[in-house]
Image (cartoon, rainbow, N blue to C red):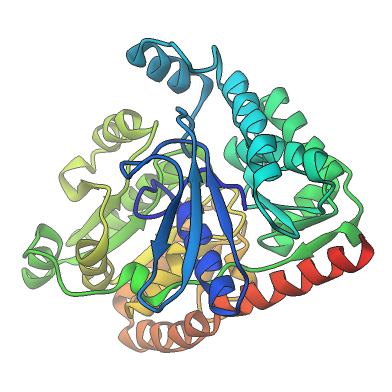
Length: 400
């Protein structure tokens, strides 16, 4: 299995998904070798990651600058800081370098199926298939259209994605929403694509309370709290969250808005909050994990996910598991499995604000959404996803 991050060394949802799926596959007797594109702060080379239960997943590494959500500009900055040396001269050279190592690793490992996650690892999967003739499954967690909010795409990334999907024996999409993008945007036949919805690990957003923080104290002071959790990028719609906040404060002035995360829009969002006149009621917490993230969910009256284009979206499941109702973008894959959630077009800031106010003003509505949503979140599990993947592996092996 090829990926680019693995918890606890992760900075986004892809690592969470790889962990949850890998663990569930291993629990069902699937032996995994997980190849990562960069050296992590562990002994170099071969490593066994041990889970709470006696399950082992092999991890393989080589030294690289690749990381989740990296842009060409960010890659060049990292390469300059490192002194260059052995690293590829551009982000795409580094992707190709990863692929060349992948072929060598594939020749030394015993396996039946190759499973590659997202575009940075698609060339690696292709090289492993060339080296061994084994069937390739590519897993699409997001497309270039999603990452750019359906704006101006990077043609080079698009071509890597399309090549990976074209040369794969099977394509896994994390939602029907993503499957349609693959069909319409990349011309992949529908029969080649299988939908496997993500699950959620109950431990990913739960746990003991963190140190007494600002958000619980805000609630204790009698304020309402509205939460955003995600990367500060165009795709996630954090700017729409701020615009909705301005409208909510006109109706319910005793409200705070917490933005949990970080990203390339950080400075822009802080500036925009000031321009909108809401900076005094918007809290930027930075990236939170474990008990501190659980505290944020539990302190909030409602979580809002205003994504412009969200292939799936695990955050609403985490919120619901912690008892907090959610408002989610209609432009999301998770909306396919959540009925006990309020849904809104990401651009409809007025309706988003109206729904936020409704949840805050009507405890019966909030309780209904929280209870029903938690049941639906509990039904979305990685074991279910793993069983679907196992069936896909069996189907490509039968054909090969």
